[in-house]
Image (tube, rainbow, N blue to C red; front, side, top):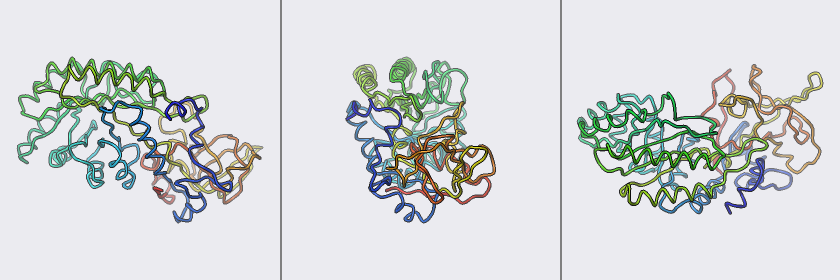
Length: 414
C-alpha cells in the first residue's frame, strides 16, 4: 500500500477523493450536498476515511514499538482532534488552550506533551495541574515549575526541548540549528539537567525537532540519527533515566508540480535501528515521532464559491467568496518564498475536459488575496465551487479570519 502511494506524482493526492456524476466526493458525499449541509460557502471539509487510512498506513510502515503523536497545531478542529486522539498514541500541544482542547477530546494526560517557547507562568501551572509532560524551552520555566509542583503537591513532569547544533536539510521550516527561539541550546543542556535534579522535578527525557515539511527521506533519517546520538550523549548528565525521546517529525507532503511523495521505507528502517539501539542504550525510553501536516493535510479540502467571472486585459479572474482570510497558506503568504499554486479544481465540474486558464482570487481588497494564479481549470461560471486540495493542515486556524471583516468559514468532519 505504501509503495503504491510513494510512486505517484504530486497531484495524485487529488485521486484520493472519488468522483460521482462529475462531482468531487468528500466522505462519500457530493460537494454540492456538502455545501448545503454546511449552510454556506466557504467551508473546510475533512474526510474521516482518509484520516483513518493515513494513520493505518503509518502504523503498517513504522516499527511497532514507535509511538505516534499528533501535533494538533496542524488542525485543532475539536471533532477532528477527538477522532485523532482515538487513533494515535498521544497529542502534542503548543498552548494551554490546545491542552484544554486535547483533554476535553479525551486524550490521556500521560500522553500529552506541551511545547512552546513562550509559556506563561499560569500555563505552566495549568500543565502541572493537568499532569501533562512539559517540554521545557527555557531555563526560566524550571523554577516556575518547581514552585507550581510545590503549590499543587503534584510532580512537574518535564522533558528538555533541545536546540541541536544541526538542522533538517531541505525542510520547509527550520526549527533547529543555529540561534533559535525554540528549545535550549544543546551545549547548555547539561547544566539545566543538573538544575532539574536540584529542583526535584520529574525528569522524563528530551524533545528534538529540527524542521518540518521535508520530502527527502535521507535528510529525515540523518536528522533522526543525529537527534538520537545527541540525546544519548546528553542522557549521561540526566538526573534519572530517559523515559521519553521525541525525535520530532518533519514528514512532508507534496503540494507543487515536480514534488514526489515521501518514501517511508528508509525512515522506518532507520527508526527500527534506533529503537534496537535504545533497547540497550536507553532501556527505559520510548521513542516518539510527532506529525501534524502529514497526518491530516491530504484529507482536507477548502471549498469556496465563484461570485464573479471577469476579464482584465486578457486575463480571466474567478472571484470567490473566500480567500486568504480563510486559507493564508494557499495564497502563498504562509512560509512560501516564491509563490506556487496549491492543487485546485472546480469541484462540481470534476469530469469535464474543456479547460481554460484562470486566476482564482478572493473577495478581499488586497492583491495578496490570490488562491490560484493562471492555472488550468475546467470552465467555470458564477455559482461553481472552487476546491483547494491539501488543505487539512494549517488552514482556518492559521489564517487571519478577521481581516477586512468578511464572514467566517465553517468546518465539517465527514
